[in-house]
Image 1 (tube, rainbow, N blue to C red):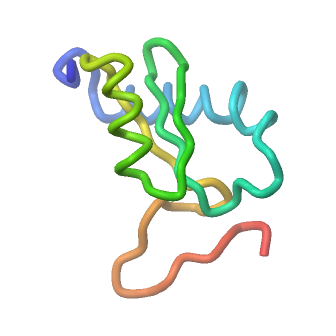
Image 2 (cartoon, helix red, strand yellow):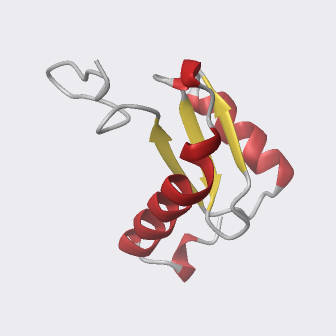
Length: 89
């Protein structure tokens, strides 16, 4: 992965932009809670209940992909020491 080409802020900014503008508007309503892994250079993405499986599929397509992940409907993909809840609930 070529993360040395991008700062963490650049990965986050580009990934969030792609998600908001291209992916979120076309996601089925039953996608809440699923993980979306986005190649920030191609805007190709994978969606799965398991973020690791989505990541593996994205990397199998393009091993040098720079990936950004998001959990649909949640402010963060994971929570530490608490619980995350869907924004739409």
